[in-house]
Picture 1 (tube, helix red, strand yellow):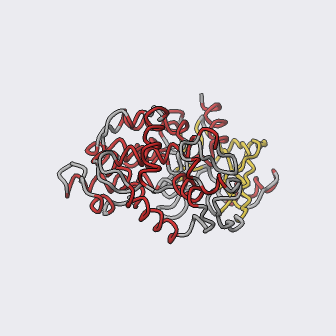
Picture 2: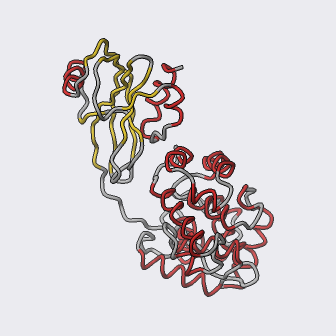
Picture 3: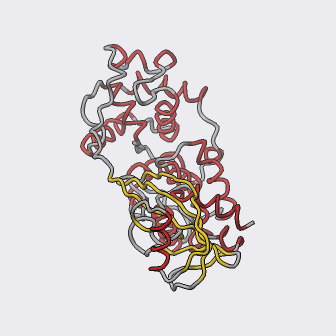
Length: 346
């Protein structure tokens, strides 16, 4: 398979590769940051986050000592905050164990917090020219179509097999280019949801799914379980020109991030007034603030918001002025409500 796919794929990549800021240099730190950010996020969406992050934390040493509040604020909008927490743990380990230098070793990279086979493969092959594969969803889709493989690509056994197959054909002279070519092919040509651009694919003549008209059927993915839907009422509380925020627990969903106080169920105004009284607050005014939905991996929040000017105090609330509000890391789940509160604080 190597001669038939490697040469045309690398030629195609040389002519069509995406111009991305983390590809300008073969810097392992920059590659690593980009790969963690790109998990479940589109390239165009990642670019401004990446540029902001690199301005503030340009190297491993800066990431290792960054205060948590600043770190979470820099990650705000990307979600999955444990990823950036693991990045900091990995940076600290690199500083302590490897004297601040990224290890040029695939197994050592996998030994860092938050780095699995894919990320280790991407960093090792692109930054250090180590011939190991980097298999993500794009690559799994490409290989399923090339091989006309009807197995579920979410199964670990399928991923292991694809990694083994690609290891066999990995070009020793530039494995990073090969891995990036496979990524770009999946992102730009061998698209998901039955819409591949086979007419411009450099691998179409060796693609079994293309030959047999199965590109709209493959790859196979097991159906996910239905998400649990949770109704919440979000309270946008104001007092003396400040807005209420609450720190989430140190563990669990959105751990240690700031949020607006909320209660389960979608309440009406009378219900909001009662909920505030139970918190030790008295509402001078209550008005609707619209609704929003946010989908997590296994749960969906159906949110209904209310503005309320209140009096009283409760221990678990922090009253933020405009500057403190802008400095707080607030999850994307509350993006719509955060914009409304920010507008009132100006």
